Image (cartoon, rainbow, N blue to C red; front, side, top):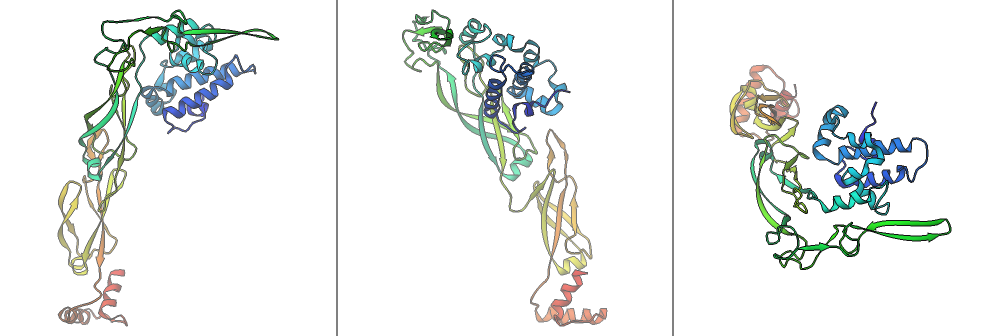
Length: 380
């Protein structure tokens, strides 16, 4: 049976992408076959690669969280099948390893340089958004403001001044890497690292774009309208495609992830798809019953309070609760707890009427007087 990917990397199921990446670096460094010669290290290394390939991609991770190994199928098979020898064809894995293995391993150097010069996807962004209680229940459109990197319109992302172009880096000859040989008592050791002149791109911009300073992108603030589904709750995450940072060298933009946080309400309390609230009524309304207008998340609604209703009784308004996320036609209930208010002082006329009622019922009034009688009446 396949091991749990979160367990393999030593992270919780709620870990964010930065935590997963750090854990992967740590575990890969520990079990890489060039470093760890213990039996089983290579197999563990392959499993770690597969775990990272699944958990580093939000869509694939979501399928894995829901369906386990069966949900990702062969989408992450590259790491498990090819092992460490195929790392040159595995995108982000080689880039990560270059940061702590000196820029190349297993002959991956040339392909890694070519990959860096190719399109690179932009970074994903996160935005935390607070909602009022009723907004989370009903959903709707919400305007947000984000700041992200957009491709420079002047140079179209090249970083070069219009009318000019980049040239091959003279330091690395266009490979994006430099090699340094060091002699030691045990022989010659060659270290491969990213070219400091071109930062691994293999090209140098002669005249930088005046608008973006040669970066190929610039920070922009923009407003977006996003749709909040009915029934969202604390921690719900929404994905807005292509609204993250722009890609490099023609790469696609990243995504924007909006995390929702719901404010508490003074009247309503949420329990899953049900809503709770309290209703205060007088002792006479409890005895005789009544029809009252109560507040719900949808607005005012009529509630029938049966005669003889006891304190703590829960009355139900069906289908007045929270819409099921993804299926708003189905809703929970609104549960209303009755609170009977017992008066501590009575008017003379009220006291006389209640004394007649006591006489009629044949009840004895204790030391608490009529007020105590009323309290005892509703305590059972």
